[in-house]
Amino acid sequence: MPAPAALRRLLPKPPLWVAMYHSIADASDDPYQVTVSPVRFARQLHWLGDRGLRGVSVRELLAATAEGRERGLVGLTFDDGYADFLESAVPLLRRHGFTATVYVLPGRLGGVNAWDTEGPRKPLLDEDGIRRAAAAGMEIGSHGLHHVSLTEADDATLAAETRHSRELIEDITGGPVDGFCYPYGTVDARVSRAVRKAGYAYACAIDPGPLSGTYALPRVHIGEEDTSWRLTAKRVLHPLRRRSPADLVPARSGPARSVLS
Image (cartoon, rainbow, N blue to C red):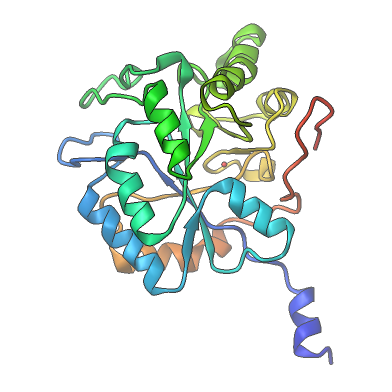
């Protein structure tokens, strides 16, 4: 019979836990259930810390995974680039010594969430806000230019939403943009190829099914109703719902790169 250490090596690794947030603000008017109040968010971060877990950006999570030191790390992601990320989320993250990734929309800088037909209008990060978030140690990724469903986009739109958005964000931050997040979580093989071709090292989806991998990382939605016991249940059930992608090493930067609210 294999020794315990050898047996552990034979067992599949549990899937990475990547939490998906959007807005950290008053959650009383929230028809899409994408808002978490600052009070609830603070409690959720305490829940992580009390269990010896540390929230990190997806860039840091994948780098740690490549080196076999991902144990105890949880990816924290924020879609849409709401201005309240800087105002409400960053101070709480820094208080816990956590980092996160925020996916922004450079085609809507300083605008609002006009793609939502219901619910309140919320301001989005402008250039200064993006720079301040980056200076606070947060990873800045792309959510496309305008928050459109990429599986329905033509080739020219798809190229702009992926490649051009990355170029614009790099101009703002002065640093590399490794991560992409599919608007609405929608992805197919064509869209995934476009993201790779645009030079990203990884991409986040929601429930990408057989596409799961570095360019379609599955994530767990976290909302206002996620109290301690619900978070515990999601943590326990996550390995049963999502298989661990075999391809979880970020690709190198550069034009020759190839190979988840």
